[in-house]
Image (cartoon, rainbow, N blue to C red; front, top):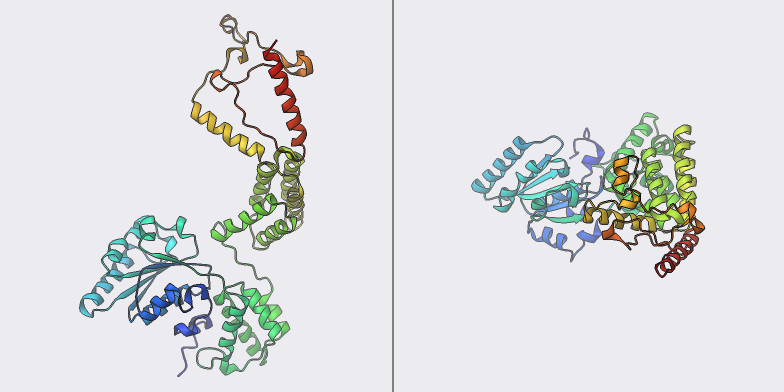
Length: 436
């Protein structure tokens, strides 16, 4: 008996048994807690966290099936409190009248607000439903602590090329739900092109394959050849959830590659984000930040180069402007590193917050009026340019309560070597001035 072939191929090819499920061996092989729980029918509430197309919905269905439980799906994009109440009422009816358990599956659960997430809590606690949520966002940030404490988080990884090739072959060979009745042929290297274009997403892979099959059929061909693949796969973009978990993972990788003096890795992560359509102005701002945070005065040119790259990118636009960002990233990665200013800034900021509104020493105050002069504003201030080496040795520029504070500690790299030597010399002059 054939399935409804009007449904998308990705929907028709959902695994119907745990043994047919492809991928996620780190949680679904014998001996792993989730696998053993499913096989034994022991239900518990859980959160599936992973990229699109990794099988979160399918796994939830299989769990309900193996546990002989009702399966109620909700989408946080389309549902609200009304739909939640209706689902709970259905679960209560099954529990009381049929003695059946219910798996309540919520897709994109991170899109529910706090009140909507809280609505599940009493029904999870009293056993009315076993809650299974799916999210592409980090649960630590996207879900309430109360809900997280009642569910175990399982991380689903993007499918490997080997996984995707298995998914593709299943679809090509399945004569009931897949494309087997079409008897299409496709070379192994072209299969690999489809797997790469899918970028870890089985749903995307099957959608691409279905379009290719329709194109081949329209041309009266039984083969998905190189020309067909090129037409279908051109213009694809990599997985990149703007402002989501993957977004922050990649910008973190870029920043750490620059900090770690790896120009090649820094270029790679920059290109990953550019290729995925990241806002170039955002990238430029972060590159400027890297110049100050991780290079600072070890090479002050880094900041200027980063700002110049930003300005050039804005003037040139895309795609010419991206090269200026690449130039800046490579320079920053190769530059000597120092976070001395960054550390000093945080220390000084903390001191400013902790010490309150300390008075400016009288000798540092301006005295533009007679009254101010009569109050000794500016009295005994030493004009540095009139002093030997243009330095007023022994002078204090802090509030009295913070005299002797030292925030900036230059490192032994780049220009900060010379800065460190100069500051050491000036401090020696201060010590000498104390004994005069």
